[in-house]
Image (cartoon, rainbow, N blue to C red; front, side):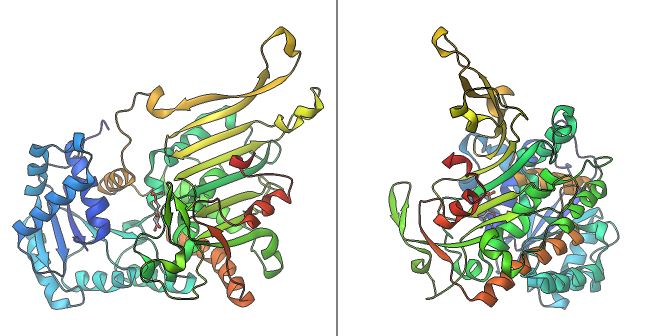
Length: 491
Ligand code: BG6
C-alpha cells in the first residue's frame, strides 16, 4: 500500500476482548501499524465489560498478536509501538452514566472518531444512544457494525432505525468482510477494466454462473449462534449475495460508493422471488451428519458440543437464483455454500455459451464452452479455460481444454495478500464507503432470503442429510443436473 494516512483517527473498540476483535481486528490494526498507515497520534480505546488494567489488556493483546499474526510478520518493536496506542476502559454498555468516561478520553485530544461495535447486534442501538447522550460523537464520527444485521427483514429494520436515529447513512460502515478480500475487489477490476470481458458479460455469451463458498470446518463451538442463524442467514444473505451482485451488476459510472451500491441494489431487486412451488427445483437445504474431515472422523451437526436434538437448521444450501433483467435473462446463477465440505474453497465459474456452429468431433462437444474460473480463496487467481488443438500428427483436429492461468502470488510476486479486515479498516480511516453495505442492500437481501426461510417453515420438511467431508446432499447435484449441467468439480 503506497498511501499514507494523513488524517488522525482515534478508535473506540466495543467488544475488544471478544473473539472477532482478538482474532481479526487487533491483528489487522497491527498490520496497518506495520505498514506505517496509522497516523502517529492515533489512539485506540479498547472497551469491554471485564475489569482489567490497561497493562493487563496490553498483555492479552500481545498474546493475541503472537497467536494470530504469522511469525515472520510479528515484529517486537512494531508490537511495542502499536500497544503504546492502546488504552482500556471497563464499561457496562447498558449503563448510560458509565459512558461519560469516554467523553473524557475523547475530549482529551479531539480527532476524527471511529466507533467499532464488535458486539452483538442487539447492543448497537443502545451503544449509539449512550454515546450520543454523553456527547461522544459528532457529524464526523464513523460507526462500524458487523453482520448479521438482524435475523430477518423486520429485525434488521429495527437495528438500522436505531442506528439511523443517531447517525446518518454516510457515517455507517456495515461490514461484509468478503468485500474486503483483495480477490473480491478484483472482480470490479476484472469486469470494468477489461473490455474483453465487458463485451461478453451477458445472456448472449454466458450460459450460467456458479458460485461456491465451501468450508471444511464445522461450526467451531458456535452452536448457540449458528443454530439460530443457519447457512442462509450466516453466508447467503450477505457474502454470497454480495458476490452475486459484483458479478451481475451493470457497470457503475464511477468508483464512488453510491454508484457501486446503486448498481448492486438493482441486482438484488431483480432477483426472482422463490415461491413455494419453485422450492423443489431451486433450493436444496442440507445438514451434515458424522463423517470425515482431513482424514479424521468428525461428529454430525446434531452431535456437536451444545447441540439440541432435532434441530432443522441448515449447514448447507444450494440455490438456483434467477435475475429478471435484460442482461441475465435465461442465465441461472447456481449458488452453493456449506460447512464440513471436502475443502475450503471459494470460487466463481462463468460458463460461456458454446460457439454457434460446432464443427469438431461430436464426442468432444461437451468441451465446447469456455469457462472463466475466479478463485477467491485459497490460491487466489483466475484461469480462462480455452480450447486448442491437441498437438501431434496423429491427433487430427482433436480438441484439448487448457487454462490461460493467472495465479496472483506467482505472477505478481506478492509478498502477502492483506487480510480483508486490514483493507476494510484502512478504508474506514479514509472515510471511503464503497466496500461497505448500504441499508437498502441489507434490506433487499433479507427480503429475498426471508421468502426462502418462510417456505421452509411452512413446508415443515427437514433438511437433507449429507456426510461430513462430501459436497452436500445428492439433491444439490440433481438440481443442476436437471438443467443438463454439473458443478464444476463434478464435470
Ligand atoms: C463468517 C461466518 O461471516 O464468514 C462464518 O459467520 C464463516 O460462519 C466465515 O466461517 C467465512 O469467512 P472466510 O473469510 O473464512 O471465508
